[in-house]
Amino acid sequence: MAGQDSGSSAMTEERGREAVPKQGKKRHDASKPRGEGAWEQVLTEVAERMEKSDHTAETLEGHVLSEIDVMKEEIEGLQGSIIA
Image (tube, rainbow, N blue to C red; front, side):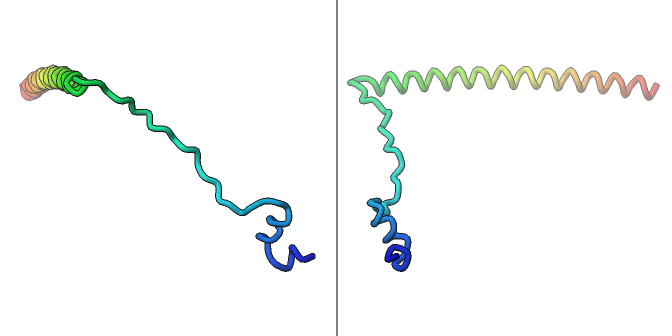
Protein backbone atom coordinates (compact mmCIF):
# COMPACT_ATOMS: atom_id res chain seq x y z
CA MET A 1 0.00 0.00 0.00
CA ALA A 2 1.28 3.38 -0.92
CA GLY A 3 -0.46 5.07 2.04
CA GLN A 4 1.49 3.11 4.61
CA ASP A 5 4.86 3.73 2.96
CA SER A 6 4.57 7.51 2.80
CA GLY A 7 3.31 8.11 6.35
CA SER A 8 0.12 8.90 8.23
CA SER A 9 -0.42 12.30 6.59
CA ALA A 10 -0.71 10.60 3.21
CA MET A 11 -3.31 8.25 4.64
CA THR A 12 -5.40 11.15 5.85
CA GLU A 13 -5.19 12.67 2.38
CA GLU A 14 -6.22 9.37 0.79
CA ARG A 15 -9.27 9.25 3.02
CA GLY A 16 -10.22 12.80 2.12
CA ARG A 17 -9.28 14.47 5.39
CA GLU A 18 -6.90 17.34 5.76
CA ALA A 19 -4.55 17.50 8.70
CA VAL A 20 -5.69 20.86 10.09
CA PRO A 21 -5.43 21.58 13.81
CA LYS A 22 -8.74 22.24 15.52
CA GLN A 23 -9.44 25.79 16.44
CA GLY A 24 -11.20 26.58 19.69
CA LYS A 25 -14.60 28.19 19.84
CA LYS A 26 -14.53 31.87 19.17
CA ARG A 27 -15.77 33.89 22.09
CA HIS A 28 -17.70 37.04 21.49
CA ASP A 29 -17.04 40.14 23.49
CA ALA A 30 -19.71 40.33 26.19
CA SER A 31 -19.16 44.02 26.88
CA LYS A 32 -21.88 46.43 25.91
CA PRO A 33 -21.36 50.00 24.75
CA ARG A 34 -22.40 52.61 27.28
CA GLY A 35 -24.15 55.84 26.48
CA GLU A 36 -23.19 59.33 27.52
CA GLY A 37 -22.93 59.83 31.27
CA ALA A 38 -22.56 56.11 31.85
CA TRP A 39 -19.04 56.52 33.26
CA GLU A 40 -20.39 58.93 35.87
CA GLN A 41 -22.96 56.33 36.87
CA VAL A 42 -20.31 53.61 37.06
CA LEU A 43 -18.03 55.77 39.20
CA THR A 44 -20.94 56.62 41.50
CA GLU A 45 -21.75 52.93 41.93
CA VAL A 46 -18.11 52.11 42.68
CA ALA A 47 -17.89 54.95 45.22
CA GLU A 48 -21.06 53.73 46.95
CA ARG A 49 -19.68 50.19 47.14
CA MET A 50 -16.42 51.45 48.60
CA GLU A 51 -18.28 53.46 51.27
CA LYS A 52 -20.33 50.40 52.23
CA SER A 53 -17.15 48.33 52.34
CA ASP A 54 -15.39 50.87 54.54
CA HIS A 55 -18.38 51.04 56.87
CA THR A 56 -18.52 47.24 57.09
CA ALA A 57 -14.77 47.02 57.79
CA GLU A 58 -15.00 49.68 60.50
CA THR A 59 -17.95 47.92 62.11
CA LEU A 60 -16.14 44.59 62.06
CA GLU A 61 -12.97 46.14 63.44
CA GLY A 62 -14.89 47.77 66.28
CA HIS A 63 -16.61 44.49 67.14
CA VAL A 64 -13.34 42.55 67.13
CA LEU A 65 -11.60 45.13 69.31
CA SER A 66 -14.44 45.12 71.85
CA GLU A 67 -14.37 41.31 71.99
CA ILE A 68 -10.60 41.41 72.55
CA ASP A 69 -11.10 43.85 75.43
CA VAL A 70 -13.71 41.53 76.98
CA MET A 71 -11.33 38.57 76.65
CA LYS A 72 -8.50 40.55 78.27
CA GLU A 73 -10.76 41.43 81.22
CA GLU A 74 -11.79 37.78 81.60
CA ILE A 75 -8.14 36.65 81.53
CA GLU A 76 -7.20 39.24 84.15
CA GLY A 77 -10.11 38.06 86.31
CA LEU A 78 -9.02 34.42 85.97
CA GLN A 79 -5.42 35.28 86.79
CA GLY A 80 -6.57 37.15 89.89
CA SER A 81 -8.63 34.22 91.10
CA ILE A 82 -5.79 31.74 90.49
CA ILE A 83 -3.28 33.85 92.42
CA ALA A 84 -5.63 34.43 95.36
